[in-house]
Amino acid sequence: LKFERGRERETGNRRGAGEREPVLSMDIFKEDAQCQLNEKLNETRIKFLSLWENYNPAGFKQKYKESLKITKGKCLEIYEEEKQMCERIQLTKKAVAEQIAFLEQTCLKMQRVNKNFENMERQKQEMLEKIKKLKEGLHTKQELISTQQRENKAKLKELNKSAEMFKKRMRLEIRKVQGEQLQFIFRNINYKNPEQPFTFLLKFNEEGNYEVTSCEPPLECMPLLLEKLKEINNFAAFLANVRKAFTKLV
Image 1 (cartoon, rainbow, N blue to C red):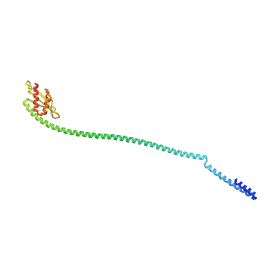
Image 2: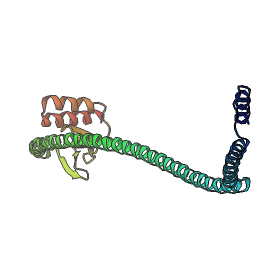
Image 3: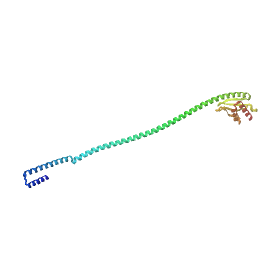
Image 4: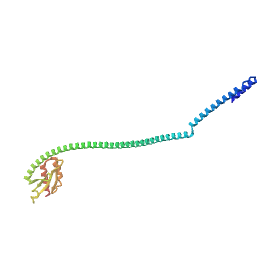
């Protein structure tokens, strides 16, 4: 329209200047302009209708629902996978905790076993030391016993000699009684009753010394007589002193 008005002003001006154009050419120009305008409007309408068909609300809403459904499904799948993953993680943590507790208990048991083993080893060494000492003590004791036996044999030999002499002169009788003891029986002490026995039991103790286990009638001086016998080791003198002590009781 602006173009047409411009053309009219141009034409008026030209007319005012004395120029004249035919009326037929103006009509043709208007028709061309109108045709061009209609074509442009038609193209615009077609484009608009095409766009409207492609972007209509119903189709867009349906596509949105489908897209939302797909997205929701994927989200649920991801959620389930993460949920299962969390459960597996919890189970793994629980299993690891149980393993750690088991290992700790095993370590404690091993420590107790090692401690018991150490105690047993220590006790074993102590027992070996005790056995060694007992063996040494037993060996020493056996040697002492052997020595005492040899000494006792010598003492018995001397005692038998003394007994033979006293038997002839003092009516001394010697008997071997139960328990490896010797019973000494004196007679002819009481002149009123020559057959009255005066007795005592004699043995060797663990130290190899003489020991009187009984005496009838009792002699208070018997411990002193034994102590003197231990000092001088003269059994004949001991028997003579015992006979004297019995004689004093009559």
